Image (cartoon, rainbow, N blue to C red; front, side, top):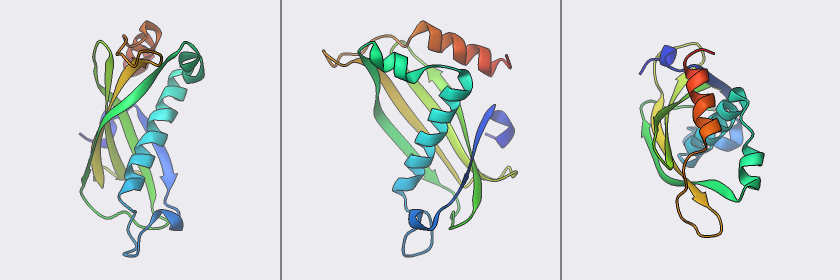
Length: 142
């Protein structure tokens, strides 16, 4: 995908503590960047995650993928693009890319899969209709 394929871009600046001895962002921090971007995407939708949790359901992360394309280093300004890749019955797949700020070249690509789960039974439950609608509106430009 290209940077323009993402309606939501989350700007971040790499902090020194996020890098490893090689001076490159430590691999686990890519997932942190993805998580922050997803949270900001939901905030941009105007969707209330806390209200969702209060109903007794929550999303469980069941799969994560990071494909490393080029090093990201301390003090780099980056943008994390996030968009829904697929909205299933009880799952939501997020497509993600990290780009240098203002550039199309991807530094990393990835995927995060969530399953909406009843917290008492630990069984899948449908993705809320209000979240589906909010995603559809946002991605359509509304």
